[in-house]
Image 1: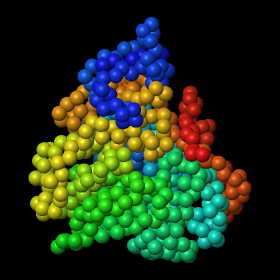
Image 2: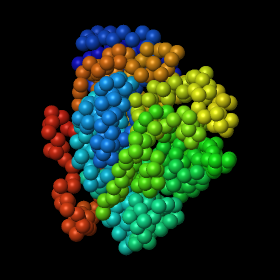
Image 3: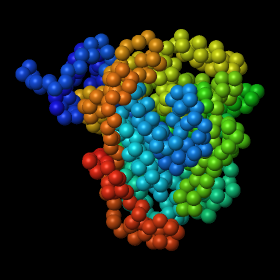
Image 4: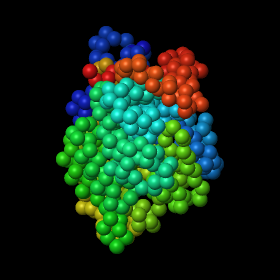
Length: 549
């Protein structure tokens, strides 16, 4: 199958192409060089004057797993509201929502999405849910840092190499692309009635600090050659003054690569009459001093959503703010914990307005879009369906000013937004959501339009209103197949799951099996995910990417 796209205006930072006219050639699902004047094409798409980028990549979006399913069950009214009012809200019954997730992402030009919080014991369920999401390629990050076996190994002074083997075994058996750490040790401390847990606090019964857990897992990720840095949800989420925790976590990385998730929730100062202020500038000053750190923003946008997290301390502390007034918290004996709290962000709220402003300050003050990534921590800051609105906020200064006039008046005087006139270019958007995102994840086969890349391509009709432009792509190709035309899905295809396979000493299985036999009702054999677990066998579900040598 040979096809070509002619006349498009390309934005491809990987090739330093910034608004240049180029044709794109696709053969059997991959971008190829010009096949020559005698080539016979099966399809020709005239996209003259349209904006062309690689398919977008979301590095942090909660699209599958136990917390996501619990949120769907907790909020059935969101399904009813969507069907009655066509609201584009992603929480509903599980089957309908997985279809909606794939279609809605594809309509915006997204072709790859990462679930950033997969509890290993729940990995099969996560992958089954992701397999049910059409069109998108998916990946998941395995959670460690509150599991009993890791803490036992550390308490027993296991060697770093033994912990590396355990981490590698976990990544392989759960078919993960990387490692996630959520408030390291905090969920286990919560089981001993801790309601706050800082970076240097000690996990009861285990005698190790949050800092030690984080550094041990970060070192394991680096030594195993995992391309994506350890993906960190810091301590003290949402607490005024927690910018100090974020800065201390950057220092704790000791120069090694680390990715900080949804940093908007850590850019809080404690100044002013309300004891709550923006510390975005302070956090970014520290960020500039640590080139080994990357981060995604976790932008807050106004409206109804639901917060879901494995950080049970943070979730429990906010259950009184649940809106509507229902919530779920849970513990697991040998794994982590978590919570689901519905929440509505309101323009009339001082706190919510300041959160909205802080996230935008983070985006606009950051100097390198290759290190700061585009997320709302879906659904915690806002549903991913709100992404087009966020694109417009970043790309249109006058629109930002108009929105600024509608938020809480006390925040307007506190924020830097009115003086931040930066408007993101299409090239910078392509850096954040395509090229840099692919490189950060180690998915070098996508995020660009060079020959050899998989043919994931998004084509947009240029408009002054960037929200309208990014809401409905003109064309979207997945593996070279046209899946979206004029903002509507025209073909439903099956995506794959991306994973890595770090090597490890098979001897670690004895330690793990002994632990499972003693403490788990689930057998170790049932823990491992294989392609045979999936009903559809027309293609391999998992694609293995290389670790660094």
